[in-house]
Length: 151
Image 1 (spheres, rainbow, N blue to C red):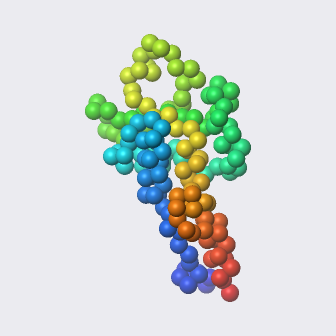
Image 2 (tube, one colour):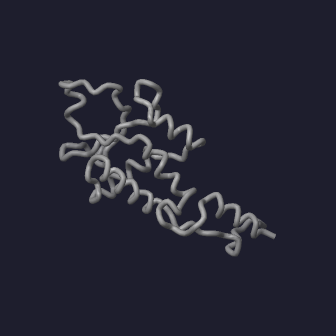
Image 3 (cartoon, rainbow, N blue to C red):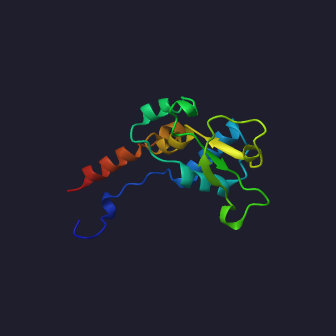
């Protein structure tokens, strides 16, 4: 309004990147690697790989498919090692291999974290904070409240 921010119409969502990173740490630690002490690595993975799905339920159903049957969501995040170069010190992503080949050296040398439905379910918490125990409306509700408060 009038080329400036109007603080009285602003609303706050008490859910941000740090909460989402901590949620991803918990989910990943439960499902695969214990990453509870690796905030920076998980934060880098979240920032690179997580996204808000345009249509959540169909994309969630797609994550149930095997990689070779149309699952475009599954991706590997290669974890850093003591020999990682400076460019990849927090890890990097690569497409998941459709079939893990036993004895293939390219699939054995690096510890990987496979992310699938986590890529879309973690950011979805911004629209449903009650799923994380926050008694607050989602991002869409807060935006609507802010617009409704305008004169």
